[in-house]
Every structure is written in structure tokens, then in C-alpha cells.
Length: 479
Image 1 (cartoon, rainbow, N blue to C red):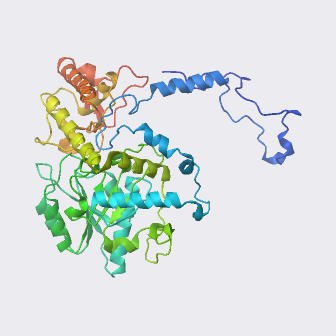
Image 2 (cartoon, rainbow, N blue to C red; image 1 turned 90 degrees about the vertical axis):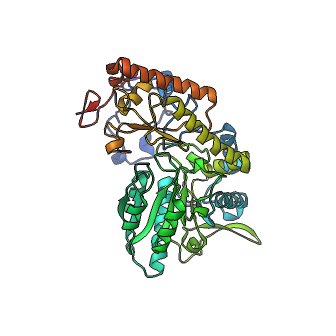
Image 3 (tube, rainbow, N blue to C red; image 1 turned 180 degrees about the vertical axis):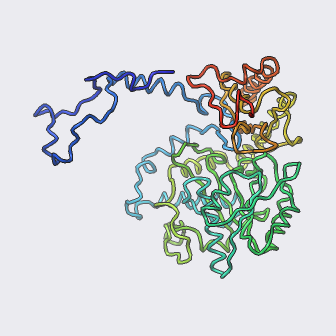
């Protein structure tokens, strides 16, 4: 185990001091009431500046991100973010804009956001967009609240959302937060939505069906139009989880498939940073009949130019303070302009091509769970090996590959009969050479699993922290 910063601490050592150049040591009692002053040390480590810098620099070297190498994290899409977009988003007019400054000083920003919403609408086949949601799941919640408001405006009470069992885990959480009951629709042995099960579940209580397409199995729901017809015939709406839209840009539009509402994940589809608890963006698009319910403000344009419109009596209200995460939205806008229509389509085509290439190369050891072609990610099975998907993924760390989203070993993405599967998404930003390097490491672990399974089961071996086994597991295997 590496030393923590507290291990480096020595009494009396300091990397900085607050001093008054005219009077020596600062007398804090001049500004604060004595009762408000701390009388005991706060407990921070006492280290020099150089020790502090070196400690956190060393921690940074131990981290791993898309700038370090391939990051085949299925479902969550960790792809490279172009540096030119980082530069453009940091231009003074964007980086120093403040939401409290007079609106009359922000016409350029309103113009950018208005045009970005138009781009999203054109790409998805929706009529209107709000850029306010702070993340993909927040966009799901926004869409579900809009659906609730639409039904309430018509005096109709519906409280059930149907969700496919191959959907993202955020879907039922978002539906519950919006006040709905969730019912799951099973998938067929081919991994597609079971139309008979859907038909049986559709009744007067169903407000909407939430569909991820391509699904988290990496498969395209080829019966989407038939699903839309059945849903609309029931008086329900169809909401699209657009988290996997990065495989469809310029090829097919959800709005043309029959969806009424959708959200986008800009980090997955439009190459903005994917952070842990930090800024994100999940724009929400709707068909025209749902436009009055969009959260305020909505960026509009008239003869005077673009402006934020808050005079919307039927709006669901404000989903986030101000106008959304502007810095992330600027990056998405730059990505769209950089790629252009053909470039966006090419990005999706390459994402699908890369995933199918990885699936084909790995199939002798890690066959696809459902067989056939995949979309932007492939679901592979470790059933031919003597180790679990959990063990396999942890061993990849020793070979310098960030483990993909995995199942089994207590993970909840694909329970039951899919517990020995793992989801791999290479993204379109990887070259053929980098894919081959990554594939060779997968194959190396597969051969290790057959020749020395215990080596794989006890991995990783090169990290400061070893494997933490979930409850119900022993020696890397189900108890």
C-alpha cells in the first residue's frame, strides 16, 4: 500500500503560511469573534509544498483515463474528447460568462444554445429541446415529468412505466423519482423486446413505454415501429433512452421511429467529458404536442434575436438553476460543427464497425451472448473459460486495460443467466492498431484462464489494492 498524505505528516511542517507583510503573524482575533475561533488543530496533514505536490502527482500517475489508452467500458462510453473543443469551451466569452450578468450581455451564448437545440432536433427527429438537464438520467427524469404533466393537463391518470429488462439501470430509478410504478418487459432469447409480453402489459394504467435502442445488450430493436404502433394505440407515449444514440447518428432518427420523448447523453454521443459526479448534460427532446411543458427557460428566437423565455404557464418548472451546464454544451456544439453531417454518420459507422471487429476477433474464446452482429458494443460470454467475467475483467487490469462493464460477481447490470457476460465498447475513436493491441491483451487473459485459472481468479496482482469480493462469492466464484 502506498503512503497516504497523512503518513507523510510531521508536526510543525507547513507548505504555506498566512502573514501580514507589515505586522508579521496575522492576528485573526482582529476580524473574528473569539468564540468563533478554533482552539484545537483541525487535523490536516502537516507537509511541505514539495511533498504535497509530489504526493498528488504520484496519485495522478496511478489514475487511468481515455488519454492514457483504450477504455472499453461498455454502456457508459468512455471515448476520447478532442482537445480543440476543450480550448474553444475555455474561450473568455464562454468560460467567464456568469448566469447573473445582464441577459442583454449574452446574445452570443443564446444564439449558440438555440442553434445547438436545432442541431439536436435535426439529428433525432424531435421538434423541440431543452438543454437544461444536468446528466443523462436527469434528462430521463425531465422527459418523464413532461409526460406526467401532459396526461394531467388532459385529466388522465396513468401511473405505470413499462421498461425492457435490457434497459439502462437508470430507467427504473428515473421513473420512480417521477412518481411512477415500474413494470419490466422481458426480452426474447434473441435479446429483443418480447412483443407478446409488451402487448399483455399494455392497459389503461400505462403512461409510457421506455425503450433503450440499441439496448444494453448492444442490439438494435428492429421491431421498434411495431412497438410504437402498439404503444400509441393504447393511448400511451414512447420515450427513448438516447444513451446509445452514438451508434445511430445520421443513420436513423428516433423521432422517425415513433418516439415522443428522448434524452441524449452528450458524453456518449457528442464527445464531452464523462466525469464522476461533475458537470454533465442530458438534453431532452420532445414532439411538438409536448413543447408547452418543457422546463423554463426555453431559448427562443424572434425578430430581436435569441433570448431565454420564462413566460410558460404550462411548464413543469425549472429542472436546474440557470441554463444547464453551458461549458459541456459548448463542447457538444463544437463537436457537431467539427464533424458536420457526414462526419457524425461516419463516427456512428466506425463505432459499429469497431465493436463488430472486436466481437469477431474475440469470439473463439469469448463468443457473443446472442450471436450475430452487434451495434456499438458487444456482449461477450466467458462460459468457455474456467473463470467468471468478474475475474476476467480484473485480470485485464494487470495487462494495462481498464476493465469493461462486467456482470456476474454481484454486479447488477445483467443478472441471472447473463452473469458470465461482459459488455465491451471500443468506441469510434480507437484506431485499428489500438484495437489490435487491446484485443491481444484480452486473448492473453483468455489463454491464462484456460492454463492457470487461479492466476486470473486472484487478479489483479499489480495494484496497491486487491480484489474485494462481493457478498455470496468465495475465491472469485459464486458460493
